[in-house]
Length: 331
Image (tube, rainbow, N blue to C red):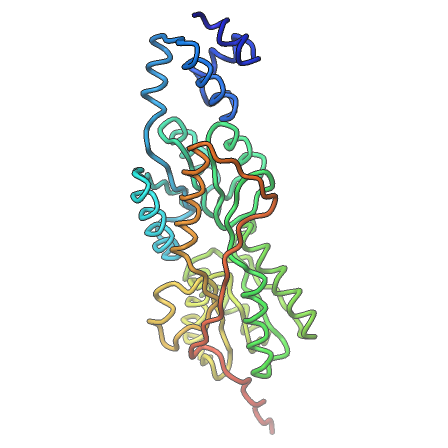
């Protein structure tokens, strides 16, 4: 049997068969799988094929995250590890350090080493991610990319509950401390804030963008004071914690003067004073669901649904929110 026999049987060109074995990243995963199946059925073997088979059957997947130092990823990593181990797979962890360039280089180095890839909170474009999805199974986490399997939290519901909570307390003007401009999650959260505030006839104010860390929140605190806000919903819990710290340095007390709400419910949200009211998601379940799906795709499953898998969110009320302070009397 020759490469031309395989090409004729698979309905592709001989050059496509050659690329499938020598440069698999240049052929879609579906086409490469079909060519390998034909080659096996016809008994076509070569040193290239054997080398390819040894290299590709790694039983390894990769979890790419935007910043390993962000504690929101700890439970996601743990859930992904458990799901990978249960399926007999090893998991690699790749850190993009909040940089699209580092993320691109890191993924290019990782692709030849793994059977599947879970990409979390990517800063790459949809086109870039779909291109990667043509080379091997990919599941996108915390972001919806048309044409790729995606798993996302129910942001709209969670934000709605947070805005309703603040409205019930008596707040009529709510700020949103934005995260990175390239973040899909930031755009989704801001839209949810605007929609909820519009429906409840509450004024909304966008602040930022700010870096998605504590120091970003400390910078946001000054903007909260300058805009005279009595309530603010932060891009994530780290920014919310930074806002609380920054307001304290400015002599502003939380929640007496300003109510603060975060997003993610990281472990530190219950450790700070006051405890942080936040929108929580089952982060460990997110990691598990993403890994189970990418392994299923590697084993031949197909993704038929056009919409992402949506996991529920909940509002966790702690001590960082309260009724607005009464206006101070002036002489």
